[in-house]
Image 1: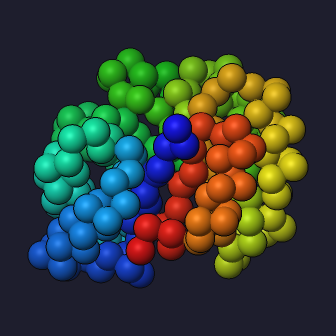
Image 2 (image 1 turned 60 degrees about the vertical axis):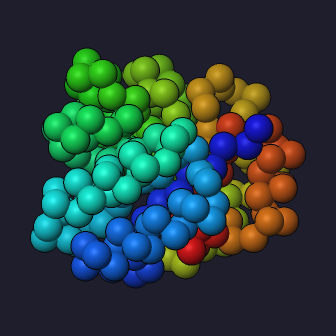
Image 3 (image 1 turned 180 degrees about the horizontal axis):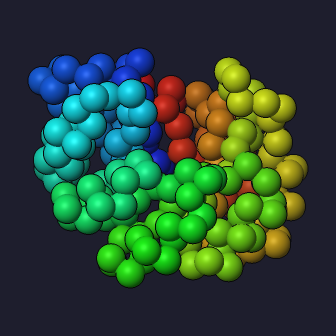
Length: 184
């Protein structure tokens, strides 16, 4: 079964705690993702909002709450895991040593293979489809080629906004798909 990975964004979820909690709850009810990522690079109250995120996710059985890039915060909040950026490969072992599952953002086949060799549990691979400011889309053919090269669990990411694209990702054999806009 294709796994769903919801990613938050201040643009849609806001940084106001009560509003954030309400919107997140609504989207989790509507989409029932297996994974959810709290990501807000500019929130000055990031750790507080992350606590709200963990609390809301805990209301849903089967939702694995992930914190973006902050290993210590992910451990402190007892998150399922941490989503590291493509510049944080050096932190994979540290996160694993703390008992966290690790997802790494990747944009090339070489990065996927590196994340796999360093012990990451999952990667996001992007952009699959056209998405604003993310460069040339890789496409489904490239995704399928990647899946032959690795056994790591791959979430397709980038420009996934409708059920037709989700179906294409599912048919590719990817572990799952990640999106901000699909889940909003």
